[in-house]
Image (cartoon, rainbow over all chains, first blue to last red):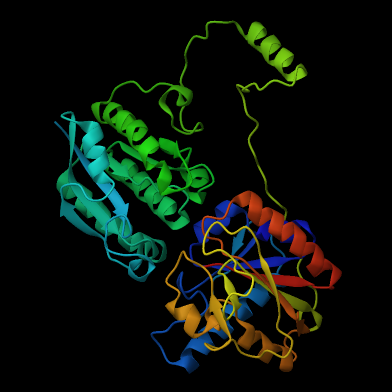
Length: 79
Length: 347
């Protein structure tokens, strides 16, 4: 799906946990997530802390969308 | 008798489904689950002396730690061959089988063998590093897969000469094997040409590699003016799954309006995905589809707007062809609606 969205002319960022799969699939802008069943959350911490994590991942994704890339790039989230 | 160590996931290990996908690697004596079918196929030639069971999510999320723990177990057993799977079309399982086989082969110099479906992302990632037997896309294919894998496993364990992929049933792309064809090249080429002209089936001897890569687009210039849309393969749907998107091997995607929605709650949204533990997403679907955070950013002027529709499907065992077709369709809609960028989340 990532490839088809990009092929249609819309820049796309892929948020996922197992980034090697994203590389294999062919995403160009990749942001690592927390875990497979809760990519943008962490039920082990409080709801407030969890939201902070989610904000950081989304902010990193927006940074990825505004950064020129030359080939497949993983944007690490700074917690 | 040859000693074989078998790697399987928590599901085939009988520990449980997605709720146990975080299971830490453990080793048991003897064969477990699909191992018993392999034992029958090996007969008196080989025995599965030990089985390692590891949760797919644990392996995917803690790959280095899982690899180290499993390598230690393999060092202890010193098998004649390390067998993994088969993983069919399970993406995380295929990735785990490929990763651990690659490590065992490279670090311990023990022959390895795994099996999976050709569209499993683990196949493309590891096909040039090991023998991977091509299987069907679900466990229905176990009966076909076991004899093929068992035969090749014995040859590999004994260090015998391995034939070409077409003879042995592994995926082409790993090693080149020379053999003499009965007919010379010109004759074979003319036969293929004639078959093609008659509209008859023929098998090419040199399939063109499929380098389906899309170049990265230039970045969004001003994110504070951009309209951003959310897409997910994590199966987030309105509570009750109104379009009945399948839990696996999805035949469709959903388009849902989120005008005025600022938060996905337990009462309003859930996941239809059958390939991961749904507990966390059902309690708070923002954990997969971050509507709450993007609404706040929209209000704060950090992004131009969050598009009022999101697109969703379950990426669990869903054919690449289907996913591509869904995305071609909804990407055209997104383009029409003036969407500037997409955030796509996967579980």
